[in-house]
Amino acid sequence: MPDAPSLIYRSAAGYELVMRALYGRHYRARLRAVADQVPSGSSVLELCPGPGALYRRHLRGRVSAYTGVEVNAGFADHLRRLGATVVQRDLTAPGPLPEADVAIIQASLYHFLPAADTIVQQMLTAARQRVIIAEPIRNLSSSRLGWLAALGRHGTDPGAGDGHEQRFDEGSLDRLMAAYGDVTTAAFTIPGGREKVFVLDPGQGPAPDPGQGPAPDPGRVPAPTGRPGKAAGP
Ligand SMILES: C[S@@+](CC[C@H](N)C(=O)[O-])C[C@H]1O[C@@H](n2cnc3c(N)ncnc32)[C@H](O)[C@@H]1O
Image (cartoon, rainbow, N blue to C red; front, side):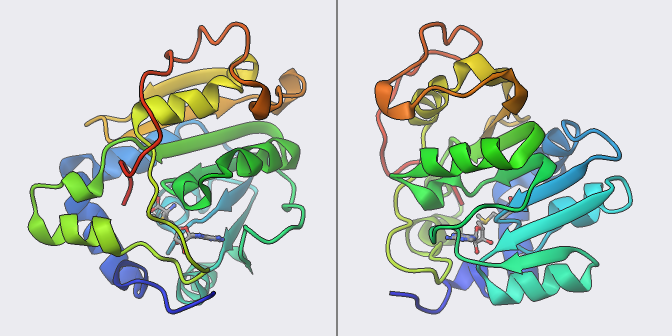
């Protein structure tokens, strides 16, 4: 059932404060790592943009068009005030995504577990040139700061319903993304190692059905090592 968003998602300023504390000196690098993969002049679709740090710091003025799809009304309003086009929508509800050259999701794929592959497939359909997936592989709840750890355990319900406790670790993320090995053009961790970025080329043919297991040659993606669990993520 939909409910009020958790504390971490109630204000744009509060959210950015938590993210800055969490990523420390690597906070800027996490945004830049994704922005660097976006060709100038391309049109961008960002799923789950939150209050829009990626748009505000790196994409506004550099891309030809930008659309965010975000369930949180406060974040959506904030992003609109920055000048972005925003669709306020729960992405677990059926419906096609707006098309764009580049589709991005950062630090949000875990919200869609155990059906995260559905989002990846939708992004491959929506994107003409590139899909960028950046996902935490180390846990906020493992933070040395007690208040951050508590937020990590209890504080990331976007207000779209139950769930959201599951997280990726590097092994479970690699296992999901191995199904897209044939269309993956780059895979790397951001400075500090808290997030891993995958760049997919939707033009390289249909991705295999994730239900059929890893692609025959997942060589460009590190081999899966872990199990899905209550691990990484804000
Ligand atoms: C951890 S934040 C990430 C925000 C931003 N991408 C970043 O990296 O800072 C996750 C975002 O996903 C949004 N979200 C979670 N579930 C969603 C859903 N079902 N539909 C649309 N947005 C959702 C939340 O409201 C929140 O803004």
